[in-house]
Image (cartoon, rainbow, N blue to C red; front, side):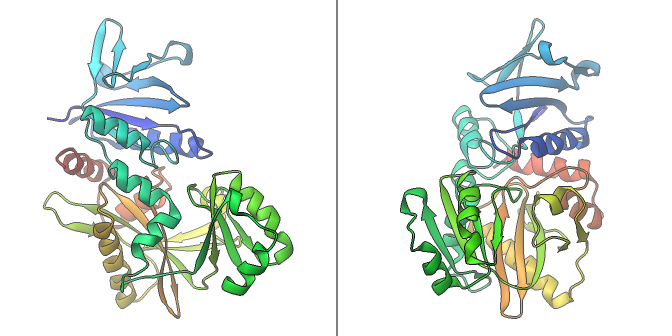
Length: 338
């Protein structure tokens, strides 16, 4: 029986501060009548206990935070040793979203909230993920060029224009929250966009720009085994695209439920469920699309979607008429049994 739930947040990526907000909100929403909740801040190998709800609750001062024992995923609080039954992973970016944390927990036999290590690695890498979907008939993928840093040549901008046209999106393949992403409209801006993308990772994706409406859908597996698609959200950004500023600084409208027809809603939710199944996902994921005149285009999948009070998945959950504590209980119950 799952009782002691460790919520892990912080990360080794540019997203670590957003991860903290997501983790703190998640921890606050887990049903304390069912679970003892332990908040763990983990960054660059230092894992420390921030707070726990057991025995009336305790929050530790920064200099006095107990250190997590990685040998068996436990912590000593005073003279008590606590071994965690379950991990709710809220680390955006590495190591929580790219499979490293999942691999560690799998070796220890500790159940956790997200996709397994292999699937997490695939979904985190934008090019790998698209490769799994390029031949399906229920969603389209934008044309792209995949580049490693050592493959850069002076002729690349010309090749990009010939194959993809302009504008294009230049993005790291393994980063989130739109870090390192640039919409390039003029070829003169290409070199700077490439430098920014490679500042976040070792590989880069150059993708044709698809005009249309940005729509997102959360998906998770319910206790009866069925895959549930949450209400669709429409994103209307004040900026060139749904970048970090639009996501976190109020420069966008997030309309839930989306202003789409019933047929469009069914199209997006059905595609979301099929993608979830094809990639063998677990827990809750968020899938991003562009709905254009040419059809529905897959953008990316978020294996550890944002979970602040204002994030998209909590908005979807509220619109569906669900409570966050009940929703999180379902995630914990289902993923602990997988």
